[in-house]
Image 1 (cartoon, rainbow, N blue to C red):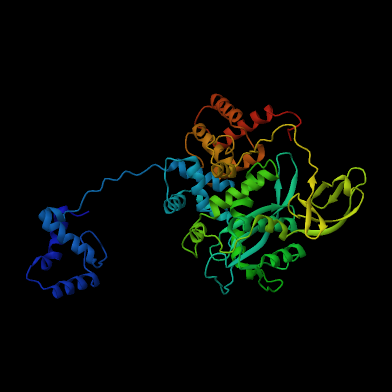
Image 2: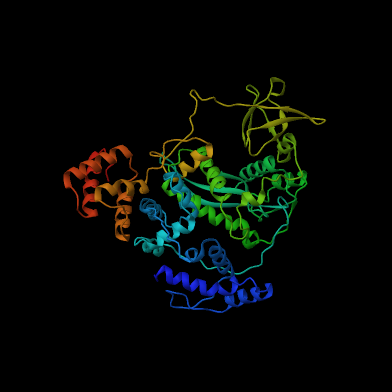
Length: 509
């Protein structure tokens, strides 16, 4: 860098004409315009470039306040923040799931390091500099796109889109593996997900549950758009929308691009939820629904949309529809009428949504009932618009049911969405925490390169999932046996033997 006095002298030469009080306002503007247009040689720079008008005016103000000393360059004392631990944890998250976006990484890093703020650009820059990031890039595959027209509504709740995502497999902690769909209602204007429910199939009851959630919270849309799937084209859905006065857009079969906005949401759902379920313990279907609701509310609805230049939550701004509907009318809208015979001794009535009981007066008779396809609710139709609610036959649990919890990154999102501050060691213990606990053993932050990341990921897939306390005890035993300075694969082989020896014979491969 040139001498500060040399730089101050050069700056004084550039602003000398502006220091003359006899210079007219027009001549001053002309000089500023020329300097901002014509490139000049700067001290210490190899390529000439113009001097911005704001820079010239700042130099004039500093000279008149402090003289030639005010034109000297100011010393910058800036200490670089050590972000190695954050970058290491981010690389561990990407090794576990390469398709995680920067938005997801920022949320997970905020949960792990709440006192260290990090911007999106800084995270991208730090990841790009790391040697292990090249392996992450190689694992990602690009997808081609085709240009199409885009249609926009003018206000919230003018049009809603409805569609299903799936099926995709979900493994529960009891060992069962089930195929699941996600049925969602999305506002066309703001891209805000108004409701989302999980369902074993893309069925009519799941569709009714999603529609009711959206309508009960936000009111009625003017129009609805969805494809010709059997669940959406069923009589209860069509009749219910007609009774509520919601118009249905005419769509052409086999044209998924017409619902481009909800298809884009499904791609985000695939990355932020479906792929995360591979590394998340799911206790039950209710737990899966809670994980979905927390992911949509805290990740999707609050992320910055590329087209909107704001988040869907900001675009919707908590606006409600001007058209509202009462609870009773909403419950009646999607009801299904059918004829059924009650049991002559118990008065039981078997319906698709469960079993109910009529009073002794109607036992053994053929009755006209209306049942709710999505909820365990039914009424007996007596004529002249008279209805008698039927009592469901349910079995109460002996002990209260506690909320389900499981290990994985999505559990942290669910805990924050519920408003509980819980310890993150157990629910969030997985491959990223394994990277963190291995760092003291090997003597440096891991992963150091792509090879280390792959070795640790293969080790976790072989012996995981792991509990924190036994693993840390095994790490201490390994350090006492092998010491420091060895290769990472030597430590991993020793840990693998310790873990295999601690497992029961029935669980060993």
